[in-house]
Structure formats: C-alpha cells, structure tokens
Image (cartoon, rainbow, N blue to C red; front, side, top):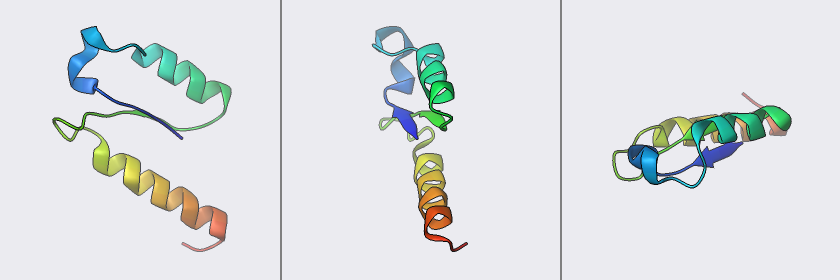
Amino acid sequence: MFAGNKADMENERVIKDTDLQELASKYKAKAFMTSAKTGQNVDEVFKALGLAVSEKMGSK
C-alpha cells in the first residue's frame, strides 16, 4: 500500500498522482493520495490498511 501526502497542494508535490499510481501498479498495491490538512482519504487509508492486515491474518 502506498500513501502520498499533500493532495491539497498538487502543484507543489514532489510525487505526482500518475507516479504514485504507476508505482502501486508495479507492485500490485493500492495507492492513495492524502491530505493531512483537509483529511482527504485519511480514513480510507486506515480502513484499507486494517482490512489488508485482517485479510493477511486470516480473519474478516
């Protein structure tokens, strides 16, 4: 799982959305662009992470 930050500052980010998606695709992983400032996708990242851990542990 990959999580980029500063979704609210698109023009100032070092990693662009397309770069993040390409990296995630390469590793067959999920990718999220987040913003700590606005909260964009923060809950989604933690939910996806919890689900991934749960699936790896064999419980749902």
